[in-house]
Length: 64
Image (tube, one colour):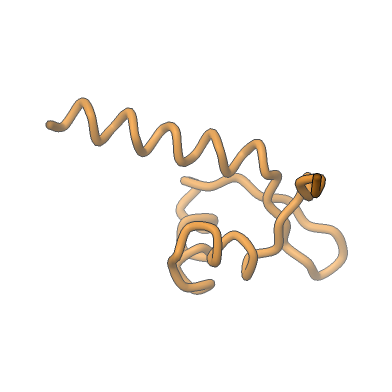
C-alpha cells in the first residue's frame, strides 16, 4: 500500500484537481486554498486540499 504524501506542490495539486497550476495559484492568491512556503516552494497540505474539495461539494449541494 502506497502512503499518501502529506504535502503537495502546486503542480501536484493542479493534477489532483484537474485544473492548471495557474488556477491553483489564483485560488491561493484569493485565499480560497491555504498554502505555506518552504524556501521558494509553495506547498499545500493534503488535508487542506481534502477540506477544500469538501467545502466545494457542500456549496454545490446548497446551491442546487
